Image (cartoon, rainbow over all chains, first blue to last red; front, side):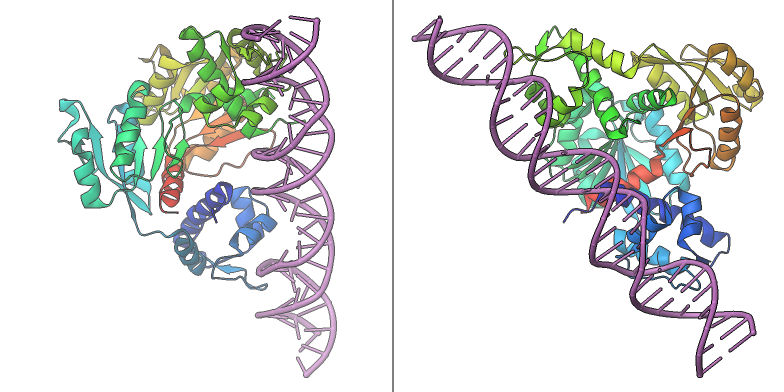
Length: 203
Length: 203
DNA sequence: CTCACAATGTGAATCTTTTCACACTTGAAA
DNA sequence: TTTCAAGTGTGAAAAGATTCACATTGTGAG
């Protein structure tokens, strides 16, 4: 059974706010409070948390610490190793961003084909020539990549990395990738995103 | 009646591939061909196109040019004016990216609070101090903004721009904004995105 | 100890989205 | 012409997601 994408997104979001709450010293939380912090309804939150191995109490709600643990357990969060391909401005910005703030994963290698981009360090992450991808991906067990390459090469690079064992791609190139359908692709190109928001600003 | 977000995303995607096809000299297309280019099923495409003012013919499918026009008509695409707030690496990268490749919209102004970021030009787009936002937004009729500011100020900036008339926000800060619910917010923070893909790479 | 309260967990109902399946249309070929 | 093949447009069915509503539970007050 494949779990719903929507639901996984929400749960990842709950985790983020719960971690923030834990840091702020909160120990317990009710579904309606979490609701106010996330835009999900209380009922939806309770439903999402149903198959976690923690349950809440009517009197004190959920124990923040335990709930985070259960979510990690549910999602399977051993600090995931991710690679990024394409070290232009966007690629560098994303690397800094993610490595500066994520709890649950790290970009551990960058790849490019331009010699001046290879063999540097960005945000604690070494950069390699794309032709070494397979070797390094296998050494590190990399299954997820972020794709920030130009549109015209995105399909080729995507094929190359999936041949090297990658199972999931976060695609920032504004193009539809065509890959075997056991590969998970999430499209996040910015142009479509802005167009969508512009549409809803007017409607 | 508010149109479905999913559907609007798909239609925006159809438009993108149709424009590419038109440039390549294609004049007609069948739903199953568009399907192969977009990952939507033929039935879904036909259903999405149902309420357009063009219809296809069994023998020649849809006329590419007309379909693009109908989609523009449906979505309401007068070259939308967008602003971006936060001109760090990510903000600059996005500005270059969008202004370099979008047909349907343009980032016309950037805003920041650091004096060294103000009064420059990035990707054909002038930058201003955030305190001038209201004035410029009103002059230009800006209703959509891209938010690439640090988490700690995102909520405040969001409130400020909505007070100045903004109706839709594309939010790259990893935080849940709380705004009046007639404001459309699309969250695209990269950390959640990578976490989601990492999850589905393993499942 | 008992009661009242407030919040959980969840079956059932509702609402939304996607897929199915087929009558209808068009143009080309015989 | 008439027939045939392939594709559209769309009701109806199915699948999926969200919300409702309530029985259940745990706690503190009296």
